[in-house]
Structure formats: C-alpha cells, structure tokens
Length: 135
Image 1 (cartoon, one colour):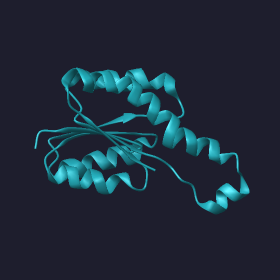
Image 2 (cartoon, rainbow, N blue to C red):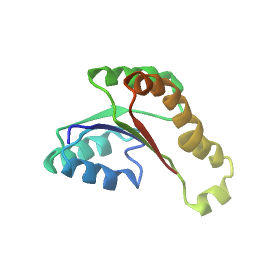
Image 3 (cartoon, rainbow, N blue to C red):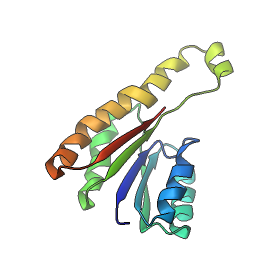
Image 4 (cartoon, helix red, strand yellow):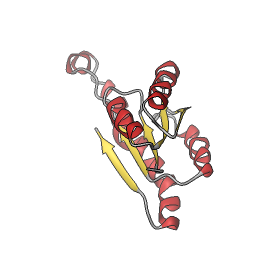
C-alpha cells in the first residue's frame, strides 16, 4: 500500500494501535503531536513494523499558529487520510478542574476543524481523501 496517513494527536492513547496497523500495511505515516519523545519512539516502531516511511512533527491542536507549517510538510505528497485523535482526561481530573473541558474541546473539535479547513482544499483538488475523527 502506498498511502500516506497523517495522525494528529499521535501521542494520544488510541493512536499507536492505528499507527501499528497502518505500518504493517506499508503506509507512509506522519505522526503529529505534543510529546516529541513519544513520537520518535512511535516512528521507530512504525518503521520496524514495515511502514514505507514514518516521520514525526510537532503539533498542538491548541495552537493554530503552527497549523500552516504542519500542512507545508504535506507538500511532499498527498495525504490519503487525516486522522484526528482527541483527548479526554480522567473524569476525576475534570471534576477537580472543570476548566480542563476547554482543552478537550480544543483538542477534539476546534483544532481538528481548523486543520481540516486548511487540508480540505488539497483533498478537493485531487478529488480524493478521507478524514477520521476519534474523540
């Protein structure tokens, strides 16, 4: 398979399982997230499992100033699928600090919508592409 997938929120709890499956299919992976060490480990794991290529890029759904630079990396080739893996802290943490909900909204909804707004024209020009949201 020669598809390119970008996983935004790749250092979340759910994303590594998807990255492993895609690696085994020989996909090119772009792992984007906040935890650089975790992403580097994830890329090494993906390559060991058969990914055609795996690279990590910094991404914070709460900081839209970094979105254009992230998407500029995609000029190397089209993205077949963009996956957004949101965040959800433990309920006890949210109960203790309800303001955390703002970050969850940013990670899971607002940030991905802004990235998609920038990515959609590329997919539309090609006439193909998919978006997956995991919240």
